[in-house]
Image (tube, rainbow, N blue to C red; front, side):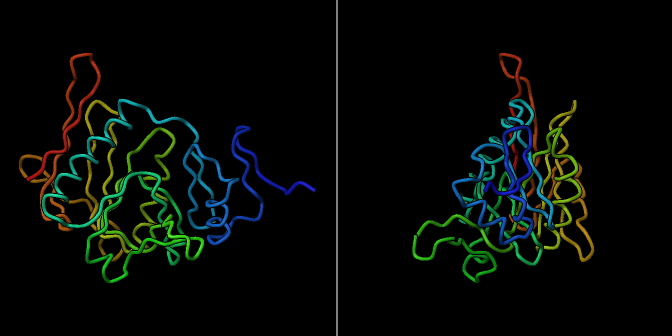
Length: 225
């Protein structure tokens, strides 16, 4: 007999019994899990995004920010940077999601505050990032406003993640924020006189710029000092 399920847009079939973190993790690593779209487990709810990434204001922005961060981190040997499709799990925050970018310091990995985990013991296939990375970056799209600015903000805070970077490139100007964890919530890093934002985790200041390229599209630069 077919298992009861929720079907979204005729593309995603969510089994009716996966609304716990452990059940979601099992499903996420099974052959039945969709290989396209972004599906998150956030406090007992399943968030699904099936739309392709908008190229100019999401995909490009993400790529340039990743490149800028990677150069900064590698030059200073600060830790490891992971791109999207890295599966982040935090049990106490009741969260499983795939951030656009996440960063783990060597200290976090050495002490076990965050670890790469197998789902099948002994497989040597590390498919989960379990614990509290030091920085998580999300790029806002039309379908992710609530998830990125409210739901994930709350869960990342519960997970003890020190910095949450948010980028919204959909408007006339790029909205780039570094949110710093306080006791109750995240607070925005105050911009310096020239617009740079300081990251305590990365030990520098950052500014995201956007210009038109020679064919009329966008080019981004993550400036740092």
